[in-house]
Image 1 (cartoon, rainbow, N blue to C red):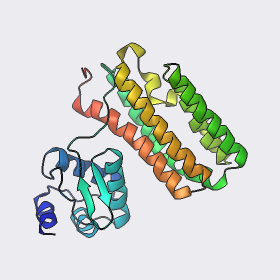
Image 2: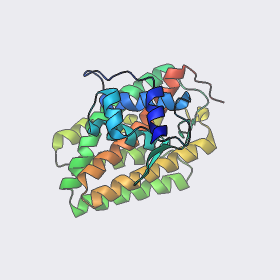
Image 3: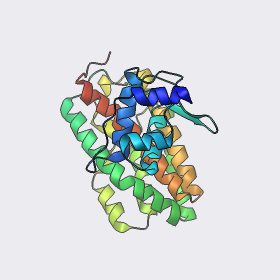
Length: 254
């Protein structure tokens, strides 16, 4: 317990303003503290109550921020133990040699929009889906698998899976909203194939597959909150990856 208090005292924290995206702001600050070594691998994060006091936010915000850190592979939570740091740097795979900065800006804008729209759409889909919707989602999931087995980037199949989620909401405006972007809404649609690292790209695509499966299972089980969180984790992981490219201003990643 004393160790946790020591960690809390050593953190360089800025209280979160009302205009910020609260959970993402908290997650980014904690990630910075971890990468800078202010919280070491093996250390436990301060308790929820302590973090609420440090940042001036609610428990809900702290829990969402911790979930984001989990999605980046930085921390793990064990019942009765708390949340511990397991890695000093994000486990995200840098899978491109070079990316046009303009493309990065477009990707981040699109992902920002998708984080707002698709998390809600996924929750609605879980609550409203029919058995036919589940069958369609499973087909697109299997199509994604088949594209990977052919060595393709599965851009079209990825888009079809997400569009089917919007369709399952039974809200025609959500479906129409998503249709206007076609497969260009998928971040890697803006990347040049020759700039991609094959092995790292394969790992990235299989991670997407795992995340799609989690989303699909939540929708099948009519787990609205789980579906919302699974979609948020899926999109936030991608956002964080491309944000790193932009923040570092380093596009030659060899």
